[in-house]
Length: 173
Image 1 (tube, helix red, strand yellow):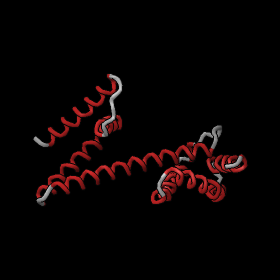
Image 2 (image 1 turned 90 degrees about the vertical axis):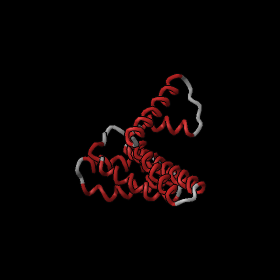
Image 3 (image 1 turned 180 degrees about the vertical axis):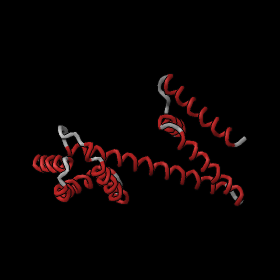
Image 4 (image 1 turned 120 degrees about the vertical axis):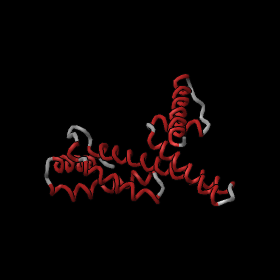
């Protein structure tokens, strides 16, 4: 992105944030290719268009919060980067769940076993969804076999698994 493009995006964002609705179309025309290209470099093509659309919608939804002393392009790309991270986390969860379920399906034979495994995974997903981001990350790191560095990391993992065990026991007793 050139300095002129960056300056144009900034000027149009300031105008739009101040309530000038005529700035919307030129701002969208200037900002959309930048956001779409950034997201396309960060995600697979199948997801990039949707995530870029989500990002641009959030940019315009948060335009009233824009600080005019900051760079508008950097602000918009920051929002886009959060959408990219969210998309990656979402995709990671879907792949893990699908891979776990496929592994269980291959090792089980009866429909009852399959139904039980699906219910168990659904419960685990619900429990993990109720946990904090830090606890989920600790459990995920442990399951991936990552080494816990330091007493704090080991303690966090132990506490996260302890919370998960307590939730499981409370719902299955």
